[in-house]
Image 1 (cartoon, rainbow, N blue to C red):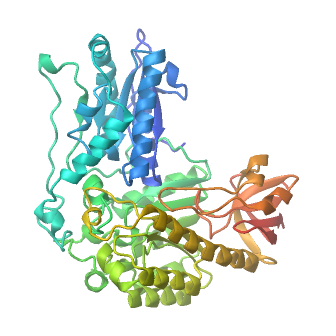
Image 2: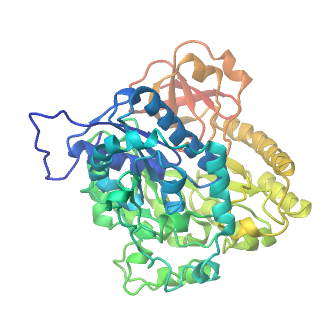
Image 3: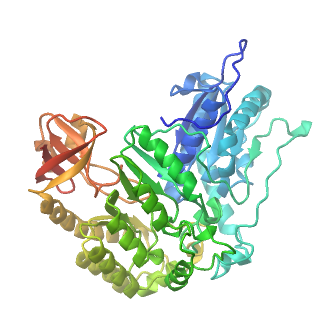
Length: 571
């Protein structure tokens, strides 16, 4: 747990008991940080946090709405929470937060009247007030709900899909220069809370149309990750116009935290025992560019971004200046750079990573495709040759770097020839880490309305072909480590289930590892660790024969490997 830094101290009430709140968080690491902020704010306000939903006065479901499967999981979790509430504790308030509330802010209260409050991304630090109001209003809703029918999951999901299909894109969303539109990022409106007596039983609703919130060091936070690693959000929102993505509409335009504020949080995390700081945002390579005077958002292409970066003052804030200052902090720790956009890499960033010894030799750089036509249809702002050249420069400039990427197969208009180009590229480039999405047709995106949609069966087949090619590469990568000594971060003692299976899936990164028959041979006392080439939860692991201190670094020798994981002995 990180220390909260606010001077506010809740005043205990000697009469009433503190509220008890449970929380379910879905989706990515960025969403997890939002959940941690909500928990920190609740604890600061004197609320008790519980894992026992049946005993909670309120349950918060922090939702994801990035793709259809994530949206369905969110709807499932909301309805399950409502069912448990109705069966066990009718007075419990159910609160929905996160991306689903942002994406369908106007319609959700009508589709889910059983929910007691909806809150958006801008409201995570004010969650205490929302919870208190929702619990207070809950008693008045119970009698009213007895006479009302409830919508099924099927009806809710169908209606959400209809909403996006019928929604017209605004002119600034259609624009090719979506980042530079004057209107983009300036559409803030807040839906007012119901205050009329006739609407007293309607859900409390507090969602900003286009979010502007960004946490700072003073924002309370209760970490949900193990003590030895943490996610540090350096920016929020995104300016890119990718045709398949709805994140800018849900999360708003890119907004960076100040470097001083980020360094203060990193220093506190290190003092608290953190050995790995994972820098996250929607586009970490864009960090700081929005802090320059009179900045323009229309710089997302490599040429415009490079020109803007070169024109900055010598003391300007960039991802490079941030990495240099974090690297100078005292202590033995890793800095891991996640979610970089290929269009925003510079020679300076390559040199910075090479110079900063505490920055892990690992880069997450989602490419999504390599065929020229697909890159154009995806609006990725990078060409095939640019990507090929960039990878060569990164590998030449940062010896020992592990490159992680993700690709989308089955995108509208993807022909057999364009898919084959991608498959050949994967085989030739030999990425150390790779995940694959099948394209999800998202209503409300430009790609969702494109002609040439690919059948699901063909999408899945193409995904299997790419993963089969990567499977061979992964075994070669694992084999290359055998006999070498590396630095590893020990996570804990391996249980029998971990040793028998290496199955990790994530909607954000695609399937990473598959069940590995070789792990069945791994018997005895093992500890689980990660190397520089392995990010938390999504990449491979190191299984170490012997006992090592958990949450600390150790030098180990790699003595064997499975398809995706390594086997080691301590030195």
